[in-house]
Structures are given as structure tokens and as C-alpha cells.
Image: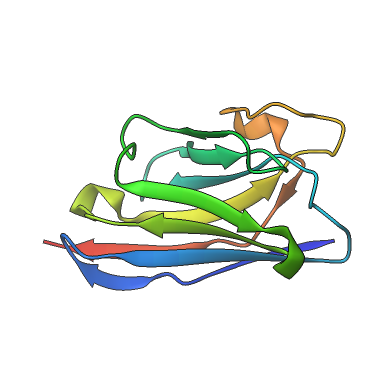
Length: 125
């Protein structure tokens, strides 16, 4: 079971990045998945979540209107499109998945059973 996050990098404020999270080893097509981030010296926090069918998404207030979560189950990949990036978005971004029987989007880190390794996003001012 593996989640692999990628797509991080250095971008200027106002720019865009798209993160990807690919999964292997088992199917997460029906699982609730999410993105979290951890800024330096801070706790890991919820960014966005999506249900397996993509019918429902949820965002942290800090990214609402700027970030879009999506998934392509045929490609075993989830995405986070990040626009209008700000220096305060600088963090390591993690993708995560809930157990298949858990059908609701949760903002709690402890509710996610599977985690990717993280990808660093740095936004310069």
C-alpha cells in the first residue's frame, strides 16, 4: 500500500502549482482522500478532502476559492490544484486516505489510515 505525493516546488506569490497523489498496492477508488499540510514549526492541518465518487469536496477556509481537489480513479491519482498561492501556503503537503468503510470527509488527521511521504511547496513573496 503506497501513496506517492509529487508536484511540489518553488513558486512566486500569486502563482500556481498542481500536486498529484498516486496510489499503488491497493485500490483507493472508493475511499475518502484528503490533503494536509504542515508548515515549519506547526502542526499538520487539513487542507481539502474528496469522497470516492468525487461527488463531495470540502476545503479549509484558508484555501477555499483558491485550491481545487479532484481525482481520476481510472489513473489512481488525486490532485490538488493550487492557485493564487501565498507565502503562508508554504508547507510540506501530504496526501492521505481513509479506510474504505469510512464514507465521510474528515478534517481530523487521526481519521486517515494511509499517508504519502509529503511534497514541499515553497511560495516566495
